Image 1 (cartoon, one colour):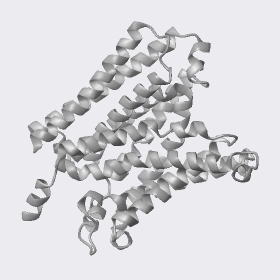
Image 2 (cartoon, rainbow, N blue to C red):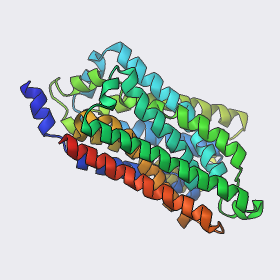
Image 3 (cartoon, one colour):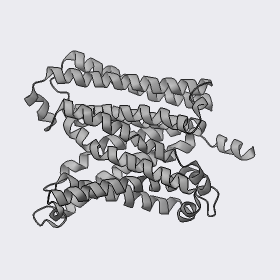
Image 4 (tube, helix red, strand yellow):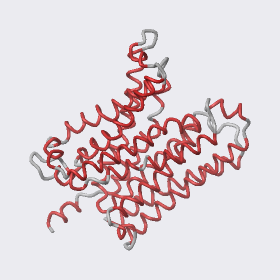
Length: 357
């Protein structure tokens, strides 16, 4: 009883929401460094991104912050290790098409739709699978957090409506000025698949409670804020296996294995920016796992806040990149309403944390 009370008093939901929001910012901007990569095929720079973001950065952080990570993983229940790994592999399949979604729809619209589906699926399903359906409603704090999720989904719908309105308004040449390979029909299909499959990341990151408990109990113990790192490295390893396997297959099929030693390509530049994209991408899930302990029993809303923040920042980025240039006042109004609702969903989530506290 004392331990539960002590853990509860260390929570800070407002700080948790802020950390999730910073993670959303990382998720929105990670793709930008790829624009600096030159003379490499997609599969080549995606491979470097995967090595940096799915292996190097998480393991360096885990070894720095979790001194018992190897002991934890050796003693953790095998079933949870496999579950986290397979959920990471599920995300890996969705993550491979994440880049295609952005190529076809642009940063703003692509991430809005993909993250929207990922948000709803990744927020509501884990509590149900874990047998904690009652945590979704019943108390003022839980009810308010559920309202926040609903507002987030409605905001995503408005952003999607703005995207469809844009599709009907602009001529093909105008749309491709900002997004060179713009294709709404292909993009929507990819976004639906990618958004749902990518929710595997949420399932995996929330699927190792016994692993996190071991991290906080085996000497030398991992601090509470970093207890999720052993889970994170397992989930991301599952994603890496899928991503690396597919990239190597495409390298072989497209005869692009030579990219890694190509003399006329800026090697140092490409390695740096592709690796930077991976490091930034990984940061969103580092924020997710470090923000969770601050939320207490409301930790399940973190995924919705993370995705809503990613949509908000990616939409603003899309505006700056000219992806909405030339659209009508109606389209811009739909977009504005969606953004206001997404901001409101984060405020509501923060208020639910206040009620819990």
